[in-house]
Length: 417
Length: 144
Image (cartoon, each protein chain N blue to C red):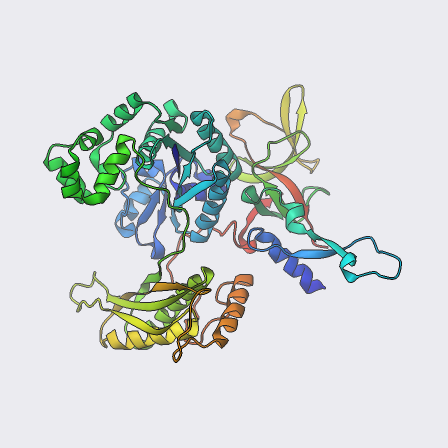
């Protein structure tokens, strides 16, 4: 059996832990640069604020319904996620962290009342962290997703934990679920299914395997098997990332090469740090920039360039040089750039990598990077950085940022006595 | 020395990321062959000492000084959110839209939240008032 555990309205819930006055009122969290809504409390959903709503278009509604608006506080959400995931890992030796607020547990060989087990998890996580969760348990991952949906949709009946453990429950659940809400069925596939009159998950499950394979590829077929109760989608235990990227929308449009280069340096440096964290080298680097699509009268330009590195490296100094070289190739003057990014890919394990005879990463950099990483980890991020990296600590627009309650000693909760 | 103490404080905030250990001087062996190894036989870790459950431990800071001798301005609180409240424990409570510290007392089957400052009234816990016990204070650390 698999359990899928999902934090309810995660970002909004994180804000509420440290500010209980937010409980019961509409809360929304905005994306980087306060652009659009990326999380909503149930109250915010109820007054019709859609996911992805552009903040400036909804300002009037925010005011009218006294919505509490927050800038995304990712250090806080990340830390709360780690706490929740760590507590959940006590309930099974096999955990797959699926996203910041969701994980699968493989409950094979755990002989307990699964409904009660779910409720116990829920009580412990909610008490210990303040984050409300829902649990769905079933013989396959796709069915666990579906059970979770039922747990969340009917909290009074299920107590927030629902188990699909009989054929009757499985059929009933499949008859309830709309095809577009099946885990992993995209909008495109949902359209295809609607076109042949398959509206509910049960209709999809009853389609011939040949049709599914032809129209929805092997992924669709696996999903269908999973929903039939045959475990097909395996647990993905944590593995190293295959590519690491950092990209941002700039707060203002940038016109000069130096300004864009400064941002690219920062993105490269951030990605390289993550690369070293997982002890990999990369052999390929991609730089991309783009103009502002909302300025329709301006020339639009979205170039990207791939650079095959002469040797694998994870040194910020070396990667930045390559990134600059790439940027030089694609940068055009007299345009307004609104975004940019750097993607590192094609990894080799640092511990098994064989250096080539002529072109190598400078071995001195290894020590240097270690020192830089240690300093930045110990003090605050960017205490040591390249001269070509930008100085301004935060360029992001974050007008409604809450405190970093769990990650910065200067921003912890204050209790007036 | 002072600097080290300061570092200690920084380390404390992120129990997951670091575990600074300090040598503990054990029983000093008399007699001639006294290898240095025997000298340091264990470590004291403040993280281990002060944080039982790293996932559910949170930090808070006291502001103001009206809580008698129990707390003073600037004290660092180590709060475990997973602990059940008990008589005589000090809890971080959320009452009337504010966080506050209160000692829990039971009397005649009623639960009271007692402020350290005797000039302030007792507070009888009454569920309609929406009192939340957010967590239980395990330690407070004061800078001297």
